[in-house]
Length: 204
Image (cartoon, rainbow, N blue to C red; front, side):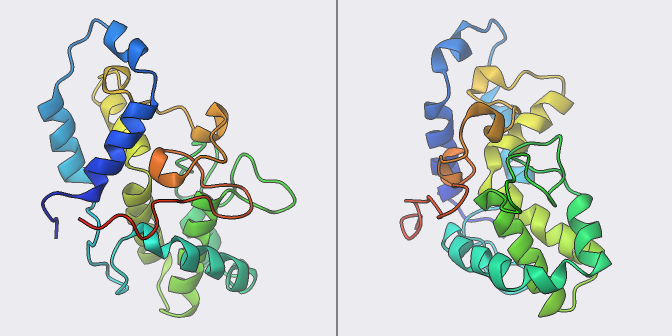
């Protein structure tokens, strides 16, 4: 269920403001903000949206999901359901990779947006007994919430609309030097310690 006055729109506003607005205004194609709002309403879940696994969507869950990446993934990675679910999804930070492996991965360490997805997947598999499809759907819902900029941009491209006038891009944040940028600002949230000042400040 969606809530009015969402933090998703505030986070998206931050992301758009952080983009190169001069380039956006230089593009001749007129922005259709109603179209963007329709796509957001269709694809991007709101802060506090209830989930099938009982944890409402919130960036406050990031530390828990990342902790599960540390504690549960070593056991889950041996399960084909875990691997199949994540390799069936693209990484929103570098979509020429799957959600099983970040393009910046070093020494087995992914960026924190990918680690959060892996941790959630491991929890759903080991603690909830989810099948491959259920894991994939839940992780994708989480990614849509956590990184709305990427999914809005890719949907605009699918509709043959440039995301640039909206201050958006589908170019992965890993490839834009944003590995240490907070997830709420369209980045990867760090490669080691989580970088996310929006935690605990997203109420709306």
